[in-house]
Length: 263
Image 1 (cartoon, rainbow, N blue to C red):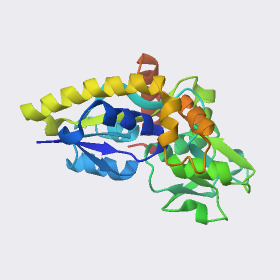
Image 2: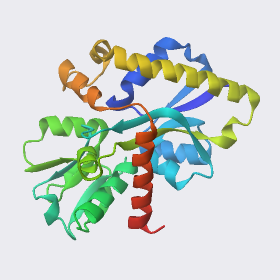
Image 3: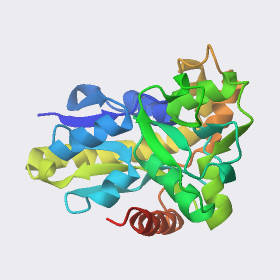
């Protein structure tokens, strides 16, 4: 029996998974790669046991999930890989189309809250696998696509970091992802024991991620586009903790999500 663990193949979690692979022999763990929306679906259907996954997935399905306390992908201000690219200021986007990446769940909800609640504008969000191909509309990117586009894009007048906007308006961190666990998958004692061991390994991986990010940067495959210093500076923006302050930000996100979506 193995513990099936979702793995987002983005730079934001590379330090965690790098350390996990060096802490523990992986024969007990089966990693399943996927973008956030794909891993959300695998969690919901029970094909994987746990995953660092969209915080909105947990918010919408608390009846089937728990989360691993103390762990998240968050930011106090800039996150550095969740960007809205636009040729107009965000205040001018009322009733305009914004193309949003189909890889995202949480960030799309955050963009809707930011536009509706913070700026009182109501754009139409249209999902697209490659939103940056459309030169006529603003677009939202996440993860490595956002990192690359931020480095190479020279055409857009306005580039908004959604983590920074959230913090400016709320003073709270934003929790982009939680380590979500599907309760029914851990009923078996052996799998529960594997899970308990994994939590200990995850704690160690997080602590080591803060200690050795400069060393880890040389192993990340975006080094051909981003310099080592740029990768390190990006990782320094990310907070892997989940404290009471983070939970306060998560609670506000939940309240605003249901206010905006009405469901």
